[in-house]
Image (cartoon, rainbow, N blue to C red; front, side, top):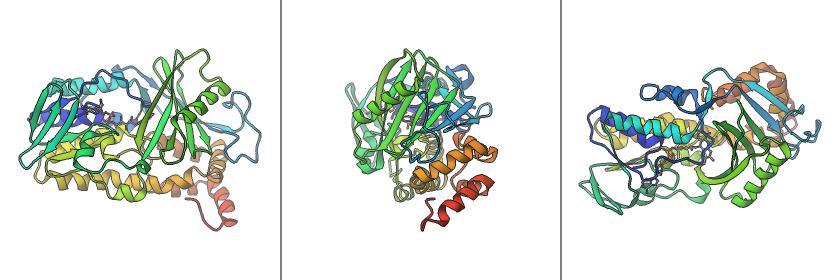
Length: 397
Ligand SMILES: Cc1cc2nc3c(=O)[nH]c(=O)nc-3n(C[C@H](O)[C@H](O)[C@H](O)COP(=O)(O)OP(=O)(O)OC[C@H]3O[C@@H](n4cnc5c(N)ncnc54)[C@H](O)[C@@H]3O)c2cc1C
């Protein structure tokens, strides 16, 4: 249920192994509130099903990191009016294919089309309720009900399946992402502008024909969606990044699990599995969710093809996603601290080694297990970090 990346990928894998699959989703073709950043690892995963080069996408050549004045910037010059060309910014070159920014209308349509071509049936219906019993699952739609042996809940952050078969996400497990699609402007550069409050960053991801600009805050952090969007609008004005653009607002929740939640994921039961956002699988720092949606859709399908799918899938998700997301969650608080951002910005400006680490992080090639050590091993950040932590009782990372 759900024809986003998780559902479409699960369906594609299943039907190619002879399973009968119906995808229930009334929304397609649809744009998704999303940056649309698709990492090299996500593209590689689906290269067997789609030719992503034929879908509208913007190849990204550089990532520009900017530290805004509010980010504990006691030292260094203040950003100029553009905020993008001051010494407080650093540019990281990305290799070809590290990241593309895709139109989600087209990227998701390609995945769905591939699943249909392989033999899956799309039923354009919204599921309004479901019940799981010993023999199967009943899914209610406005056009009547459907029976299935098993349901894959690939229905996103507000997952109905999750609400019926497990616990809905608590507020502290969600972030609010909001911003604007700035129509009529594009670029080949992503911009990451660190802000201290809420701890994180404003991003600009250039899609074909528009920029997806946004900000994200934990749902319990006390920032309303309107206030965050106003902040983003102010940044757009101050930087001049989208001159003359028509601004279309968006807002959508992103699962953002804490360390403990990532270790205790609930993703499968006797007749159901949860994949993608419905399972909570989004990196809490980079917000990369598309790769995890595709991968978990595939793992769900592969588990269903064998025996004991619920435990097989639960173990695989824990092993291949839960651990990594848990590490990201642990890393997050320290990562966005002004003191660390200060060190990071200086190192990004001065060190090719640190720029290489960040390029790999953006491309989804840098795991969190050795991120800290790889950063500390670079001469510049190692020195700065030691100086910083020698006068403080507690290292931030
Ligand atoms: C602002 C923002 C920016 C982001 N930027 C990035 C980024 O740059 N890169 C990245 O990798 N990730 C990003 N993400 C995360 C990414 O968008 C998600 O992780 C990804 O879309 C998850 O895929 P999915 O298939 O699990 O769910 P979705 O893509 O949300 O698809 C779920 C589908 O289920 C359908 N559905 C829902 N309810 C029902 C129902 N009751 N009946 C039938 N169908 C239903 C929906 O219509 C939808 O088509 C971002 C998220 C947000 C909010």
